[in-house]
Length: 157
Image 1 (tube, rainbow, N blue to C red):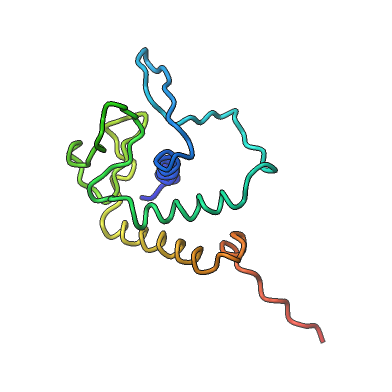
Image 2 (spheres, rainbow, N blue to C red; image 1 turned 135 degrees about the vertical axis):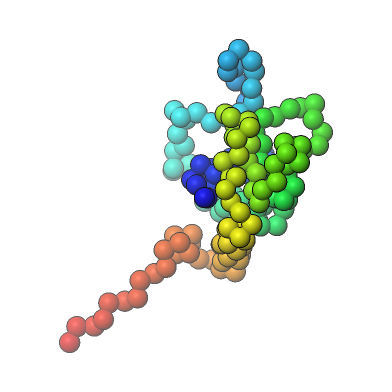
C-alpha cells in the first residue's frame, strides 16, 4: 500500500516545494514537460554533504507531511505550470483519497490510491512519531535514533 515509489515521490515533492531542488523542463514526446532535476549519473560526494542540512531536511520532511500538507484536499503534483497561481486540488481530478499523488509519467494515475483512511492514520502516526523523536532528542545521532544501541554483552565469569 505504501510503496517505496510513493515515499520517493513524497520526498521529491517536499524537496521541490521547499526549494531544495528546482523544476527542469525536459522534452518528452515532442512536448516540453516539467520534472524535478534529477539525473542518474549525478551522484553526490558523501564527503561534501552537510550533516546539519541533511538533518534539517529530514525533520522538514516529517514536519511537512505531519503538520503542513493538506492531504485531504491537495495532491502531490510534479508538472510545474508557471501560469497557475493556485494548487491543483483532488476534486479537480475527481480523486478523493487519503493521499493523492499525480504520477509524473502517467498523470491520470495515483500511486497512493490504495491508502485508505485507516492506513493513512497509521502512516501519519508513524511520521508524527519520527518527527517527535527527532525533535525531542536532537543531540543524538540519526544512526542512534534509527538503530538503538545494543545493550552491553553479559560479563563472563
